[in-house]
Length: 261
Image (tube, rainbow, N blue to C red):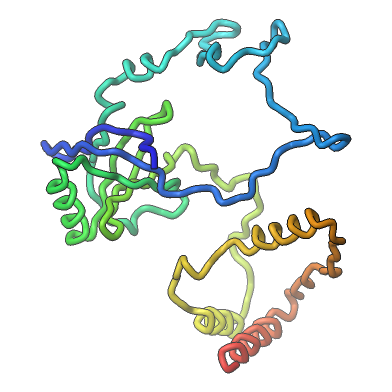
């Protein structure tokens, strides 16, 4: 595994040399775009809008348009020069309870690996977080951006989870979200009973991408020249809001029968 960042994790006067690795990967099937008339692969060329000529990757630079038509060119060194300390430091700001961080702020997980000579401080921080039942809030610069992040113990590892900034979240002001609706106490009680019937513990290993598995089977059949037959799947009927109680009662009975079976 290749580290995507290296620097120091700092809290107080303690500096722990660390490397950061991606902790997740995209499992989606990769598809290539082809010309349907001859299955010729389609490539994406980087083309200069002024001349129409293709530009080589090594000749492409990053430019910021500070006013219409005028650009400032930035090199990799310029991004480091903006704040040399921040580009090399994972700075702990404070410690909070993990439950205070709403799910919509959670972004992407990474593993933190310590330098061999700094294992004592790494383990000390990990165990202190476990004992105090707190997570660290820190800042880190990578991929040309400063991120706010949570550092938490995950088994033997310290995990860094990047968080979204508050202004990166869209308020739901343009969609229709009901403030309230009329329902009976019996309907509420029945809905709670259904929730309790389906109550369980979250076990990530029990969930997997069944659609991708089905897609692989379809691809295999097409590769063998087999005809794909699809049953006529209809959309589930919409629940009649005038008789919500009946739908709740039927759902509860169905779940009870599953448990009994």
